[in-house]
Structures are given as structure tokens and as C-alpha cells.
Length: 388
Ligand code: LRH
Ligand code: MN
Ligand code: MN
Image (cartoon, rainbow, N blue to C red; front, top):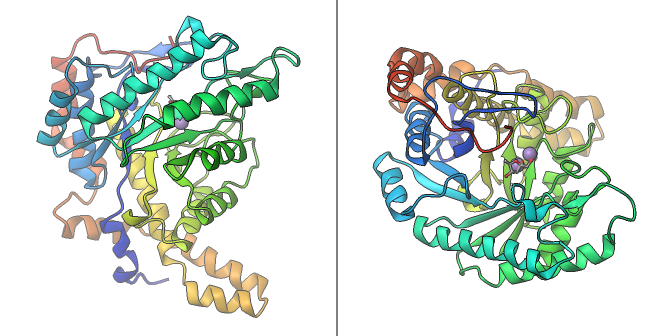
């Protein structure tokens, strides 16, 4: 299949937000491996993220996690980001590392604990006011391990009330992005296990509440692109947490486990024009690089998303529609597969070169000397925030 450069034009405005925690040390509950050169504070995380953006030209925003990225002066952090050509992106709250939250946070039976969890979000909204961030991202780790442990219904009611209190604090330009996850840390039921629960809470809250789809947060075999199509149709797909998985919430490099799934997801995005910035969908990464080099891992991730989007953009939509309308099952499937099987790597390298970027950003990073410099300069890098 020959590649019409005009078909790829949307790549020029398509950006990917990187997570601050991808640059810190991480691991599993068994072991955190320390890597040389990892950042010692949020400023150094931004410096690393700036490398990813400089070499790909497509990663200008960085998500923060609070309190992992707590600093005294967020306006200063924001100004530093701007100096590096970056913007601070979504602010992630953290409800999973406080002893008070053992039995839940926003759903906890005790009002005192719920109030504390709500107050944490008010703190995050304050951070957003200093950083200029517009997205408050909430992943709820609450849930039950045993049937009968607490009332499933009662917890939904408490959750609705807590979310309402958080939503009421948002400024007009803010969004509350609600992430779901089918299991872990709770094993019997999570309080927001799926997109339906997330969407119902969003609908009850109002138009500033939208769903976050983390690609690692579904039961094996779930058709994620169906969820994408459905949420977009309702105007409620706020963001992605991209990563890939073989088993559960593996947080591996996006497109590494199943590039065909990533293509199918991005095709549903393209069908509804959601790759354009005006759609408001924030394409974020949520990954950890436990054993691979982190900055290169982030660059690889950005390239993987770009490659999958390029293939999705190459689908001949009028051919596809024609085949669909005449009931040509194999023809329609063939149109999709032709695009998926197209090697877009040279075309993307050409585009990068034309934009003054390196054809091969990973090779350029390896040749840049940046890794050697931070390995020498930074001693005692921080952990990403969990997994100890
Ligand atoms: C939960 C999650 C959520 C957290 C992040 C660290 O599994 O995906 O987005 O904020 O991991
Ligand atoms: Mn996530
Ligand atoms: Mn996750």
C-alpha cells in the first residue's frame, strides 16, 4: 500500500502526555530495581520528559501524581516546565498509600476518612490552579475483598456523594477524569470496576466529568475499542492511560504486547475524529519501566502510538464504507488489514526529518550523551512512588 502523506496530516497536531512516574525507579511488589541516573525530584523528572519531547516533537505535557510530585512552589515547577518547552498536564490524586484508606477512601464507612479523601482532591485542585492544569484524574482503589465486607450499594451512594463534593470545587475550565479498574488492590469487587460505573457517576456529576480508559484495566479478552466507540459517542471519553499488558495491569510499553489492539483502538478514535485536539481526549501514557531504560522506554511508547495512529489514518474509509454497505465481510476486513499491515516507519521518519526532528529518536537519544550525563550527576534517584 502506498502512503499518501496528506492522510497522515493529523499526526502534526497529535500529542501524547507522559507520566512523571515513568522516570523514577519502579518494580513489582517483589523488587524495585534501581537504575542509574533516575531523577531525584520533580524538576529532574521534567528534564527527562523534555528529552522525550525534544526528540519526538509529540510529548509536550507531563502528568503529575500528588503527593509523589509535591513541591513547595508549583508555579516555579510550572515555569521550569515552560523553560523546557513543556506544560504540566493532568494532576493525579493518590488514594492508595495512606493507612486511613485500608477500607476505602471516598467510599469509606467513616465520614472522617471520606472527608480526608475529599480534602486531598481540594488540595489537587489548588495545585491545578498554580500549574494551569485542567484535568484532575481520579483513580479509586477502593473495593471489597470479601462478600459481605461492606454494602456494595451503600458504597456507591457514599461514592456519589464524595464525588459530588469534589466536582463542586472544580473551576469552569477543569475536568474531573474518573478512571476504572476491574480488580486490584481489591479482589472481590472494586467500587469503580468498569466503564459503565465510571460513566454513570460522570453522568450524575455533569459535563465536566469524563471517563479515563486505562488499557490495562480490563478483564482479558475485553473489546476495548468497543468501549472507546461507546464513550466517544456519549462525549465522555476524557482520556487514555496507554500501556500494554499480557496478564493484568502490567504497565508495559504501549503497543508492545498487542500492537493490533492499539491499532483497533486508534481506528475507533479516527472514526470519530477524536485524534484532533478539539476532541479534548487527552492521550496519556501510564507506564513503568522496571527493567528497560526509562527515557528510551518513553520514546518507544510515543513512537508506537504514532505508528498505530498512522496506520489507523491510512484506512481507506470510503472503500471500507462501500464494502460494509454491500455486505462484503472479507472485503471490509481486508481494507482494515491493508492499513494495519502497511509499514509506516519510513513515512514517519520522513515526517520527523521534515519537521527538523531526528529520523530515529531512540538512536539520537543514545548518541546524545544525556544518559551518561545524568548517570554521572544524579546519585540516589527516587522511586516512582510505589512498589517498594
Ligand atoms: C492504577 C493506575 C492509576 C494510578 C497509576 C499509578 O492502577 O493505573 O492510573 O494513578 O496506576
Ligand atoms: Mn492508570
Ligand atoms: Mn493501572
